[in-house]
Each structure stands twice: as C-alpha cells, then as structure tokens.
Image: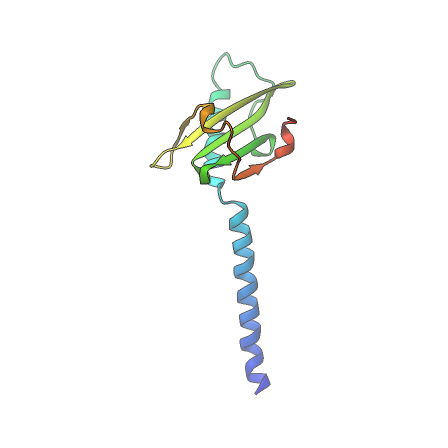
Length: 122
C-alpha cells in the first residue's frame, strides 16, 4: 500500500514545489512589461540629438522605478549626468501603451512597488 502511494506523494510534492516557485517568480516580475516599456521610451529620448548625458543607454538596474495605482503609473529616476538625476512619469493607457504623465499622479502617493530604491538618496 505504501509503495503505491509513494509515487503519488512524490508527484504531489514536486507539483506543489513547481507551482510555488512559479508564483514567486511571477510576483517578482508583476510589472515587467510596463517597466521595460518605460525604459525603452527613456532610451529613445536619450538617443535624441542634443541630449546632454553621461550614459549611452539606461539599464533597468540603474534606475529607481516606482509603480503607483496597481501599475497605472510609473515613475523612473536615474542619473543622466554626474550627480544630476532626472525623473520621468508615465501613465498606462487602455491599450497597454505608455504616455508621459505629470507629477500630480505621484505627489503625496505611496508606491505599490519600488525597485532599486538605493539608486536615489532622498
């Protein structure tokens, strides 16, 4: 009897571990699409002629990223020149694209998610 149940128990434990790992992975990347889209837009702006910058390309790991209102608003802060930080805000539209958003969407609000908080010392 135990020999018959052992494979079932092992399958159950392995399935549970796999599903738990996936849930942890997805939770950590909940806003990945929105963040990547905002980083892409920032890089397009950095490529524009006449932009004074000390970086060639913005990497996700080099920016403080804040998510507000369950992913509806994104604020990115990064060092564009030595000790000169820039902050840009974006709003998620119904079609999933992003557009620039003013600071009124972020002021006096607490972020739902923050990534790389130590990039900017407040």
